[in-house]
Length: 234
Image 1 (tube, helix red, strand yellow):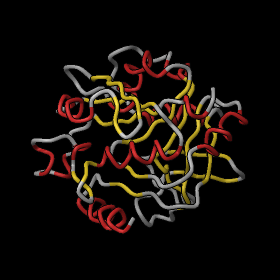
Image 2: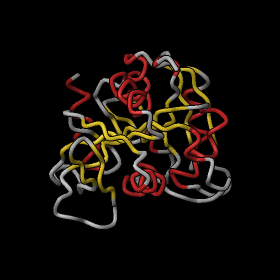
Image 3: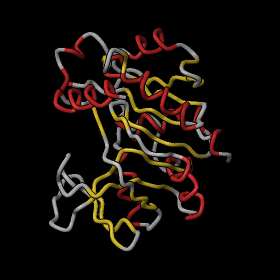
């Protein structure tokens, strides 16, 4: 698939409890960062990368996002996939969105801002022939808890609940998957993307792509202030 045609699934369905009271009446994707919703910054960056389509996986107050951004914004064609009555978790939300995503797709978290080139990530993924790819950053516990053992160009361990001293890297927040990865999961099952990634690590089907640039996120007040400072400068 040509790079420009790869859709981006943006996970934007959570309750954003760490940002309350800001997120009591608006979803996290509409929280203002440097005067504009975080989603506006994300879409603008995707367009600058040469991508043209995104599927927003939404839940809590998701209708507000749809009203605000419609079917096209910042050069990106938009579609929406609603969790429904219950939040499905990051994995369940992707499973529900599969009909709109096609054979392969990027996944991006709705509260992250990742200033790296995306095209080389896709090129590397295609060369590996694997079913999934996780970008990793040598974090050394600095920006959040490191949760990946990455050595010899491979993800050896990915574990969010267990801390190991050899974990120097962190899941950077951008991933790529073949849709077939999600076929084994039942529709409407609540599950996390971490479960999928852990399975692929055990099956040696999760490629690892190390990035040199730190990640930014606005899922917490501290992260929001940091991203605000970055985007005000740019």
